[in-house]
Image 1 (cartoon, rainbow over the protein chains, first blue to last red):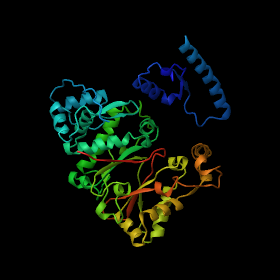
Image 2: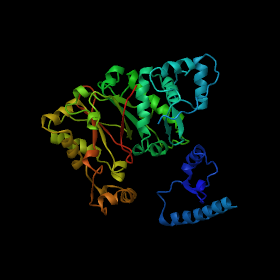
Image 3: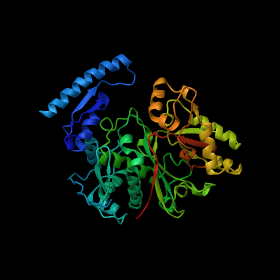
Image 4: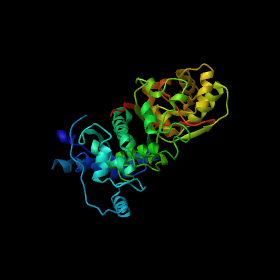
Length: 69
Length: 350
């Protein structure tokens, strides 16, 4: 998406951050912004997920606006 | 694909096996076992096993999308101890593994232990001595051990799936070192796998399967229906990617078990249908989370899922796959698959 001039942010959990960054490098997009949420994700309660999502949305907004500068 | 690509890098190293192995260990270019140093001479000898040009691009391998040229595949074949004759088979297995329906990206980067199982059919199996009988997925046969190992090294060294980095497997499994065998076509009372998949009987093929593990089934059952029932019950387990996603379960039937089905007048399709029917599992046996995942994955296929829905292990009976292999004995093997994957067969060409 970023190569097409659109804002793009990947979201992954901490356990997959290494993979995400390595794969972004391998695909020639080392600067890909990645919003990282805590792992594990699947066993969280609905309230915990909501809290994580709110923090993540802030992180995404910050990464997108940084990319637009 | 036949695009030319860059030559592999070379480096100077002392002519000493221990030193070179230490270097490979430090740089994480191996699988944890000692390697054969891929000197220029050994790689050149390996390349004589194929008519394909040294720098032909065979595939780009996920998740790092490294360029698997014929030369780079040959280097990994040397590392693993392959004979030059094995190279065309390894190239075919590499081509098969990158087909989209195999989902190599998912397999290479997952927390699941999935390994790539290579099944060889056709005359090449005998010519190269790929074991299809006693202990065929165990130790002891050079071709089985080194071909499976070489494919793993291709996936790791060219694909970049290093454990703990892009390979995120929670535990992995021993089959990630090597997993390769041939079908025992002479002992198969039906058509062999490659013929079932549309290839001529006299052709040679490599089939790749995303294998989550192996579960042995020792049963002295002599009745076809009873044998199918106990195999189907083995396949049925709630924490299974196959039930969540609609998989492609595989079996390695011993010839003794295959003969029981054949003597009862069952076709290959009859066996598949029986196993598919009897392995249906009440969706309520899934954990609540797996139920949510199954709903996300299979509602389009099965409609609204409730606790009483009988979940088939795969979308259709045709998805149940098996080969006949192994020595004498009352054992067969269930090979659960990764779920989001379909096996791919490619012809082996010189």
